[in-house]
Length: 153
Image 1 (tube, rainbow, N blue to C red):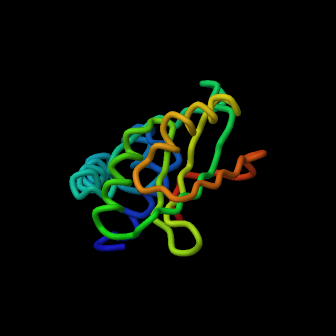
Image 2: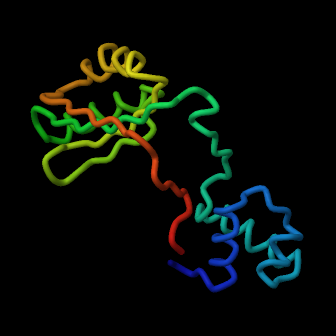
């Protein structure tokens, strides 16, 4: 990690677990004065080490009960085709993640939907119409065993 000392790493670890922590409590946990902690935290935001603070919403609380991992193979893998595909997937709100892959698939998508019928709708309306797709293979998650958003720093 570039230019991050032990205090910065402590701040980052704590912020990953609780982004709403007060500056006074954060300073206390890190072992800094409140003003020094505030300056460091502001620098971490300014340097984009912390890109943003968000609320993590329970999928089940908003009836997004099904996670589907979708492997995509493209007809060709030239820059224009990859860029067109990548632009298109960003327009589908049910796609939470899109990864360019090495291996049997060109892309791996993480899709959240309410149920199987909802996924069928997304598949018909959006996924099957993505540009330059030659093959789509979907795998349905039966149960989330473990999830974290905290990076191992």
